Length: 421
Ligand SMILES: [Zn+2]
Image (cartoon, rainbow, N blue to C red):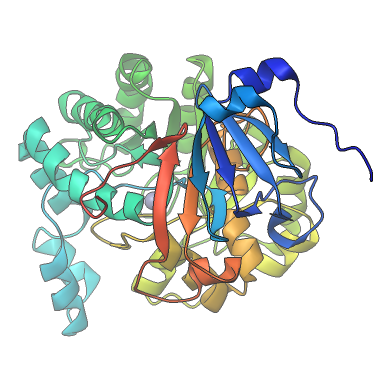
């Protein structure tokens, strides 16, 4: 019999939980099976981290003090990561959706006070408590389906008071739910009404006042570079200011038209470029060279009934890491299920289920710059985990509706949502 090396005695002594009888989809690069699947492995967690992962059960008496979590052959995956959401906002835009479906044009709706600025009005008026309460319902839905880390953007305040309010709400949601939230400043989301026709002045204010004031409240800065939002020059200025303040950067780019900002942002060190339906194929090489994640948001593509698809085949050919997110927002992507977003990425954009699961775990961690602590099941990483009652990993994003997530854990602690007891 081959002796299998076991973890060091010291590590076993500190083991608090032993995870036994799971099929483990690690999603780790160094496991060659699809989904990084390990069968017949045991895992130990300690201090909220994965302490060991071994093909043999521990036999030493010290670990008997640990609590055992029996998987009954259920699937264990890394906790899911939603790396692009706008899930804090006032009001909603269901009425607008109804009007659009009845044939009204976006321009007519915008002219009558609809569109993003209607969400800005509602968000400015809402108290911090009201925003926490409404966002908590949405966050609860995500968590019930295995999400353990979320990015939440500001961008519906567009003034000092309300942008900071949104970032505080994002932090409070993290504390209330016991999850990790990466708060991102998106003050350059739209030009607010008080700066109508003066977008340069607004960008000056964002760079001079807003970003420095927000830097203690966020980890990254995002910008919407688009014909209906900010130019390449303005967007560059916003992201450069963020870098100067020591913040991470990312961008909404090439969603509705080709502006050419995705590659500019990638060269500046953006963690991710998001949407990219209009990214030219030749630019995929630049993303690959810069190590930038391509974040696909099929929910917005679906709701806006777009036809231009992101260059997925070329991204894959160039080995650009692809993340997928809900883009949860009241206007163009009111999606409260990361599993549904992964499903849409498969059906609409042609990802395989394995690529889609990778896109909502490992690559989503890269898109947030937090891959050192989560996104895969590997020794040394946080024990952010989800248990699934499925026979194959593809089932995680196979069905629309239903929920095969049995439980999820943040640093080995069970996450509670309104849907779990
Ligand atoms: Zn977005």
